[in-house]
Length: 124
Image (cartoon, rainbow, N blue to C red; front, side, top):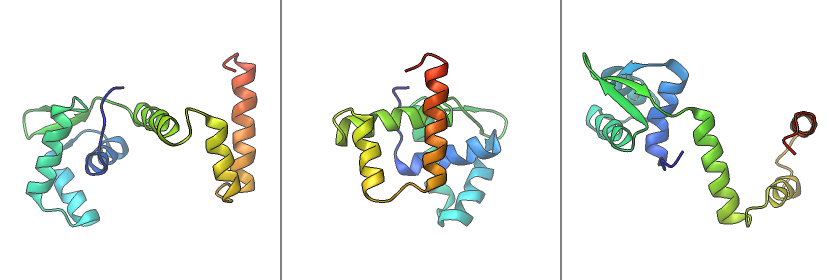
């Protein structure tokens, strides 16, 4: 995924990922409650998502459909973070999380399981 989404755009995407296709009016209503945005703000952010190719707009009713998945965005953001702050090294990221006690024992257990699964599937 080559689309770079800003925090405001991610708020629109979160609505679509969680709730599926929604009209711009429905998105605006939800984000007004969540963030206090007015309708014009939400419509502007949706238009930016459309221009970036992250959302498709169709009629009737300005129906919005996510064109990128949450996992695609997460993967792209993780790669960018690794490149920017950790010299492309996942182990430096995990070391930072461990050093700052940001991972619970349960999270560490799940990470170990994911590593073991990736090894079994030949991904590592």
